[in-house]
Image (cartoon, rainbow, N blue to C red; front, side, top):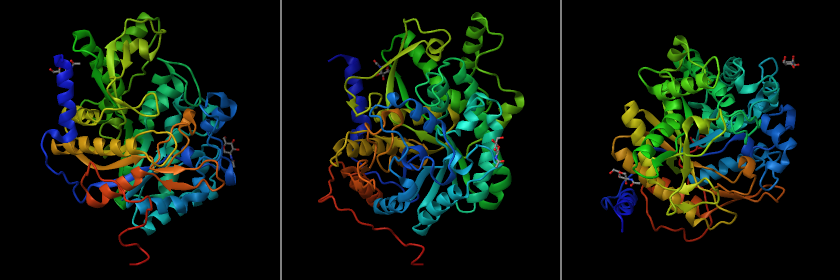
Length: 509
Ligand SMILES: *[C@@H]1O[C@H](CO)[C@@H](O)[C@H](O)[C@H]1NC(C)=O
Ligand SMILES: *[C@@H]1O[C@H](CO)[C@@H](O)[C@H](O)[C@H]1NC(C)=O
């Protein structure tokens, strides 16, 4: 056995809890929840005055990009099934439900000159139903579904998008901030920009890597900061809620310990982690210097008059600094980084970073090509952020696993336990973590994967009229963890009947 393999195995044993045989308990104030996003579950894409979103347009015009051809027109039909959704959350016994608001359902044109009252009512009903059972709503303001009318004007590459988002946020806070205490401005700015305006694999499908993605980056981050400041100034004094941002914080390790791969990995982390964290958490604010300098130099070499990554003004740096009460962590997997010897198109993000990515063959595969199980990565990424940015408050806003159809999802149950153990170790080593969110409450439209990759604790029968939901094995395991507040590696349910054991309800009070 070579030494790196030995070290790797010791690492696995370490984060698998073999460090000792201690039983670790989640503290009583640690919160457990489950999450969804509007486009992925709601359906009712044009119901009751909802406007068109970029995902509606993109998948209607390009059904060929969807793995199984199923788009979000009906999805899990949560627009009509929200009471069943809340019932499932009660069955699990979660403390909170993280869901997103569809911007065009509330503002069909994207602008606040026209409000769709039926859309407003839908979220009112959902919020009230949750609160009736003491389940806290955690609202994401933006989870990828921009109003198409705003995309027609350039979407997130238009500087005005910062204002559009602030105006939309105000409408939502006005309607719901009296009852909602946890807010997430933007879900995964990296996906909003890199996948949508860079590689173009996500709606609106714009291919402008190394340019459009950077234009978007500045606007999305400023939009987040504006929405944060708006709440801080006008709503926080009254309602004392907190506002964060959900970042895609997957871990990246070097393929080998060669200097060039170690350096490539450092740079990759600057581009995928620090580009989002540094403006908010660093004392100096702004984009990380390594990224700023590299993109500016290459832009100049390539004949651009300005850096392709637009600079932040001093006022913008200040606006962003400290603009989060907590960092939402969307963590799924780990990648291995090596220095690339390939020619990537110029300009492009890959060319700027100059890396190739791979996975360790030992890492268990999910039903999604990009998702491999490497629980130590959650520990590593939290400790990386802790050391660089002085132990910020975290909420794990997404963590999950994909399977095919079927209720016997042992691999998802194992994945939850393994990642929660890594999380316990990170907490033991000083991380300040408010809670954990399982992605996802139920099967949904996994963007361009359609229904071919299932992420749900509950299975959804997409062929049925009612979009029937049934708990998977993992739902029982998660319920048990929430109840007992410890991890029992071998625990299995005796049968697959689930019932509500929810504490006190508001009605009973
Ligand atoms: C709201 O503004 C948009 C954009 O200017 C416009 O298309 C729409 O007709 C307006 N709606 C109303 C009700 O005035
Ligand atoms: C690289 O070195 C570190 C520190 O010694 C070690 O923990 C890690 O396992 C090594 N990685 C590889 C891929 O050899």
